[in-house]
Picture 1 (cartoon, rainbow, N blue to C red):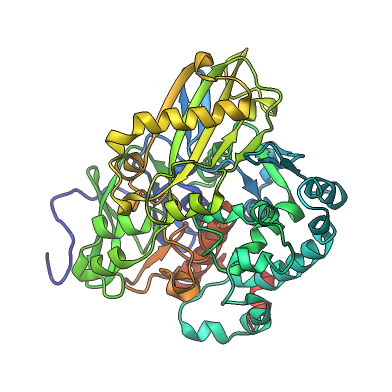
Picture 2 (tube, rainbow, N blue to C red; picture 1 turned 90 degrees about the vertical axis):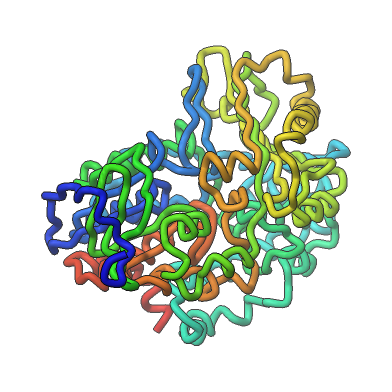
Length: 529
């Protein structure tokens, strides 16, 4: 430590000869979707941007596994609300569709119940009602009214998801006051859906989306019924090549804009002068900067890159006391042949869904897991060698706070999940496996640097939303800005992209970048007044 700083003088300064139009340098830590979007936007605003990634490829949890001719997404496989990413590309003078091909799915996904009943979800309201009628004819008659109400709810909350919450005063701004009557903070997603649907299986069909946030529908705040509206109102899309094709496209665009992307170079610390960040350090040297954007897993990065004594609100003790999302048990399978009778996306529900969710909330591995399967080969033949397919299999499980010994449990849990998969496929899938990779919550923590293996970051409960989440302009350190699922507005690709827009706008305004005025959204600015 020197003059109140936590800077190490041992590492050399990495030469940085490029200068943005405003003469300002920004370092982005982590090449996930939030970091890549931030790098693009800040370069467009006039900054000199260096993006540093610990892995040998971009994407983070939205990256790819590419082995033996098979390509799998690591994390997200549902691409929702592409308008946000289109707007980010447009702000950078580019067209998203010039970089990646998007295919709209219909049906969006299949919901398979244990007793054989199913719903093939579609964005067509009449067909959707017919599908729901397979479960409950009375509930099917309320589909259109439910969709209309959630469209209005989404329109009210959209500006809130597009601007920062930097303190309690932001709760009293115009957009929030307008949306409050629809917030219903006492209600969960499940109880909110109870206003529309009496059948518990129909409610599950419109509430499982809370798992996109790593949350139980029986605990997730009712605000998040809007996720289902985002699917039904704007569609579910498949990027050709997988969702990792999105981050690959963003990296290409960023490089074209002059962003330097440095791979296989883990950041070892944030350099500080008092409480102000002055850059970051890696094994290669020091990168001085006027501002630092953190796109790494929040809890892991703060505990490993910033000394505990430099943080006041988000100390190690307070980080440990927070609630975190569930984790996931993963199988990536390359199989011989095709499964044309399976949908692109299938959710196979546990026979006792409430028990399943309760076990996850308790940090356990459910006895009867719900599984999600992506069979992308029926839509995209670029992901596997000819005559083969890819299967992405995910089972939500408890994070590492539950104390499960995954080293011991993993082999038997693999068999349990393969049994569930085989029932969905109508055959034992094991003889067709030609490639396999498995991930447990331990792997999320040790290989992907995800705190407690909580795949979806901090939980999205009322005590950890809006200004109670780590803020986009990080409150503990000057010159540090957060993007990704650990900050406002939360997890999921559309909201991560929004976090990048929010943080980039704040940073650009703080540094006086010449293009700062082009990074905001008129909707968010007008509604907040």
